[in-house]
Structure formats: structure tokens, C-alpha cells
Amino acid sequence: MKPISLTRFLIEEQHRGHINADLRLLIEVVARACKSISTAVGKGALGGVLGEAGTGNIQGEAQKKLDVLSNEILLEANEWGGHLAGLASEEMDHSHPIPNAYPKGNYLLLFDPLDGSSNIDVNISVGTIFSVLHCPDGITEPGDEHFLQPGTAQVCAGYTTYGPSTMLVLTIGRGTHAFTLDREQGSFMLTQRDLRIPEETKEFAVNMSNQRFWEAPMQAYVGDLLQGKEGPRGKDFNMRWVASMVADVHRILTRGGIFSYPLDAKCRDKGGKLRLMYEANPMSFLVEQAGGAASTGRQRMLEVQPSGLHQRVPVFLGSKREVEAAVRYHLEHDAGK
Ligand code: AFP
Image (cartoon, rainbow, N blue to C red; front, top):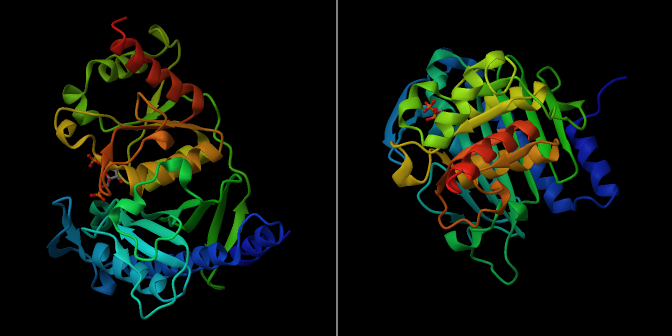
């Protein structure tokens, strides 16, 4: 049977009363912007967009030309449609209220326009991550503080991965669904409804080069994984690390596993490496909706009350039982066991 398009999927969800017309439009607009980003990424060196932009973002990281271009594409696409009250991007210092010249809606959109961008120049998968919140009642000119809602308040989240094929993975709080871009038709087509992450896994993802900087419970947890069959876990584990969160999470949504970017001595002062609002929360929503779990190691990710737009957090997400195991090491350590 021919797969249905994203447009049809969203219209059917609207008919069922699961989303309204504004949220449908918002998702369509983000998907359209992601198609443009996919085209730019796909041109590679021929597009003249590889390499450094010569600028830095709020986090002090060097921006790639494609970071800047992807941010512009998402901003331009979403500004005038009337579905948003404001936007926030990992690449911008502050949130961006919709200019008064355009109609305004009731949603707030957050995005990491091109995650994993240090992989662009070596032709490895990168992606766009996004999250949608309600704008608080009565607010027409939202400031940064209006975006500081816990992940449980998300109404929609998703990512696009620009890999061998371009895929959009989406949740509106009713399961996690995967769409593949049909490049000839220019449409995202539903290729997997209701992704389910296996509860158990034998695969972990972490940047092992940080091992000596980790906290004691993380050292103990990974130490036990590495002992394999001979250790307390009683099974051999495999390791994968793409260093593009979108690609690593996509693998986990497809075949299970645990992804972690824990606290370490290098990122402790900042609270972690990955960003709560642009990376951890949307990915945690997608993972929970696929039957997985997501935690900071000490708290359910979606319940973290954000204190800053660019806040960073430690991240553990993926197969439920494995995330629970990693959390157990942290809680037992904290309890002095
Ligand atoms: P970039 O966007 O700067 O490439 O960072 C990617 C990322 O935020 C996330 O996608 C990866 O999981 C993580 O950083 C990789 O971090 P390490 O380079 O420290 O392994």
C-alpha cells in the first residue's frame, strides 16, 4: 500500500480533533523549511555552503555557514504564517517575537537549526530539532521567560535527519511517527507509524574520550557495561557514537540503545553539554512517546523546570530498562550506597 503524505497524516489528525489548524500549519511550515535545509545540505561542496561562517553563537561556538543558513530558512518560513507568537533558536542570543507587521498565533517554536554541524564538512548525518509550546495566555509579545516551560508542556516535537535519506520524526503526544522525504514528489511520506523502542538493549552511545572527566556513578555504570558477560550486567555491550545527536537518537528510535552525554569536569560549570530546550526536551518527548525513557541521571528530563533559554543538562535517553539502570547508579551513589 502506498504510504500517506505528511499533509494527509496531519489533516487526519485534525479531523480526529488531535491538533488544530494552526498547529497543522506550523508543522507543515517547519517541514517545508527542513526540505530547503535538506536541499542545501545535499549540495555539499557544490553549494558553496561548507565551512565556517566566521561568527560565533551565544554558546561561544563557531558557526558554520550552514548553521546560519538553516537558521535563516527556519526564521523566514515561520515568521509570517500567523501560527506563532515567537521563536527561539540555539543560534540566537534571545527569543524573537513575531514582528507586529505579521498576524500572530498562540504557539512558541524552538529549534536547533543544524545539530551536529561539526559533522557537515565530513559528510556525516546532521539534523534539525524542534519543539512547540503554547504561548502563555494574554501574552502577545513573548520574551525569553515565556519559553521557560518544562518539557511536559510541549505540544509537539520532532527532528529531521539529513542522512542517506532525509527523514522527519514527529510526535504530537500520540506516539512517534517517521516520514521519509520522497525527493521526486517533494513530500514527506509516512514510512513508520508508532515507533517502539525495545525496553532492553545491548548498545550504548557515549563519547568515551571523556571517561576520565566523568562523575563516579557514570564511571561505575560504564565500567560495568564494559565488563560484558563477565561483569554484573551479564551481557556483552556494543558501542556507537556518531557525535550528531539526531543520528544517534534516530538509531535508538529504530533499534534501541541508550544515548548519554553525562556531566563531566569540563562541562560541570555549565550544567552539561547538551541544551535542554533545543535538544534534550524535544528528543525526550519523542523517546517517551516511543516507549523509552529520558533522564538527567537524577530526574525525569521532561520535568526539569528550565531557568534559562540556553540551559544545558546531562542527558540519558533510550531503552527504558537501560535508562533506569543508569539512573540507579546515580541515585545509589548520591544516597551513599
Ligand atoms: P555540534 O552541533 O557542535 O557538532 O555538536 C553536536 C552535539 O551538540 C550533539 O549533536 C552531539 O551528540 C554532541 O554535541 C557531540 O559532542 P562531542 O563532540 O563532545 O562528542
